[in-house]
Image 1 (cartoon, helix red, strand yellow):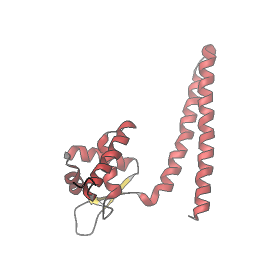
Image 2 (tube, helix red, strand yellow):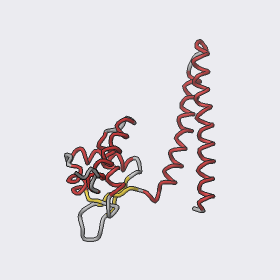
Image 3 (cartoon, one colour):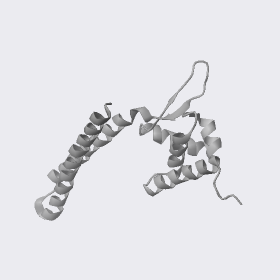
Length: 158
């Protein structure tokens, strides 16, 4: 008996692994499954119906997942002249810009934390200092992450 997985079985298993990873990260599993499918799709774009049929999921589940991934900038779509369908694909070419935007979010969180500290009384100094320490870490992480990204771009020649 052959115990090796067929390519199709391996793809479906991989898609499920991506879905479970996303679920463990706090997102709906279907979001991960849609992303997992688009990562391995050939050609690297699929229609709504193709995604729905391959994943055997409801229209609303696929729609919600695609909307989430689109809002996050991970997935985009394009249309073709004379074709009413939308073709969804991973925004693989824009990943460096997406990373820069994500890194900038650390600064937003840092500012929110410091704003919270400025609104608090001095009655709980230990807690206030813990918030400042977290904000300091976010500043450090933002700076170092940007340096890493810049270094990567320089080394890759992008």
